[in-house]
Length: 428
Image (cartoon, rainbow, N blue to C red):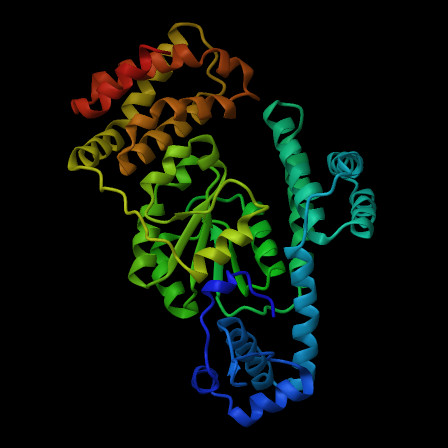
């Protein structure tokens, strides 16, 4: 019986408790055990059957499939095929053949950049013939997209090339999800992108990995709005909600998401690239950070839903942050107009001013809402990485920040924000 928990801490159940937990009669359970070997309980020294929570999960899964119209023998066959696939993915270890991964990864990436779907599929067919689908996703698809993202940031790719490659890769993962074995665990999981986050490749990959490990997963895609979250949780009633955030402005509403999840007694997990760039952000969210690697995500999730650790709730920001946020939003247009005028007067290029004004304002607004202005410096460093493809604007970033700081200090009377900006400017 597949079970990821420590054998010494597994809860033991007698036959009566299993009957009460599943609604399946004792005579039926004994018949299934005799005919199909499922469930396969242990025995006490006196010969009495002893079950585990994993046995209960399998029985409930079989009952669900029987109620859906499947014969019990067909349901057992489906569970066994799913369990074999699950064991393969649990036993998965990274391959030593990095050169082979790199060769096919390069072929796939080159085909995507050239808009050649047929050659991309040929590269994937070669990968599927050699490796488990989980390896193909992690070593070929996701790492290819990481390399492609770096090329785009460096200004070596057009936006349409990035869009074509991402769309093609997402279709590949969606097909793998559709072909995944049936779930064998009862914990229902909802996965999506944080509010205002439209980068759904990561959440799709999370969905695939969890499906490979036997979890029933509902994928909601991009931009899961906090305003409609309560209705969704009430309808689906998941055990766990996972949201992925790639940009800082996507983090702003995660505290609200955490609060709504807690009100519905739903565990809330989160992660994403922005938490890799600015690790301290995770301490401002009342949820469970799921780490910065996908290869051990399924294990983390399994541990979380099986034995949730005590949640450390961050202290709410004091009212001065809220006042500063309101004041900043009210004066944002004036600040940006001053910056625009000053940059023009100094002869600097303004081609990318609209984009950087937006990104910086959204970053400041998020930090104010989180009460995390001490993270302003790493936030600016992260912003600089996003400007690599805009080389002229990146070179002018220190000058831009000084003009922005002056405008902030001119229009904002609330010293809580101006002080932080002054400190940043001393190191810019």
